[in-house]
Length: 300
View (cartoon, rainbow, N blue to C red):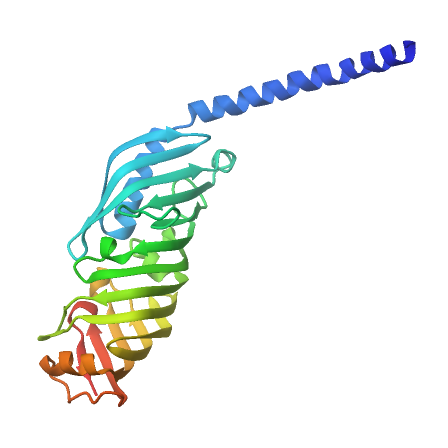
């Protein structure tokens, strides 16, 4: 019995100071969370998103989430070419300890509206900045989980869901167009895609339907190589490769793509309105798409 009492007493001598130390550390962490400048940070994030994307980003409301997060509700992204893109909710979880060391690390999640299936209609990933003043390296990576393209690409797309991954990094010290000069990759898969009529120079591309589209793009120093772009469906199939030279604004980016189309019967009828040779179902036709993205011309 005496031995047990002595052992218990020794334990108290160790756990007593240790317990007080852990309690003090916990209080310090809670103090950091409570005093963290969430308001200035969320304003800065929205400002930088406006600047980097060239879009107008508005949030109806925001709040602080636990353990250390900023939550926005009813966001709207607006631009002259995309119209308005609604976002149901967005959450940015801040790396507190990295922030106090001078780095900004944010894990983000975006929920798009109109999604009934749990886990779909989401974009998630991370954003890392070398410093709070944002003069140095920036990197972003993310994952798209069954995002409804009709929500984000109206009026060009009326149906389709996209899933894929992307990453991009750049150095803000290189100027206002630093993000265009960065490097990164995009790989996506689109299912059940319906592209609506799109103007192409003096004519317009008819509505097209594809069961599946796959794309892989690698960008570096303002030039994006299309390493994979293919699709197939009721209107036939196509493959494309080439390069896109990024410009500011992005809709003025220059295309230099070689496209091979194997038309189906449906597309042959739709293409009659284009200034192109007749499409024979099942017969491959190769042409080039060159010039500004929103006014590209077809060349043979």
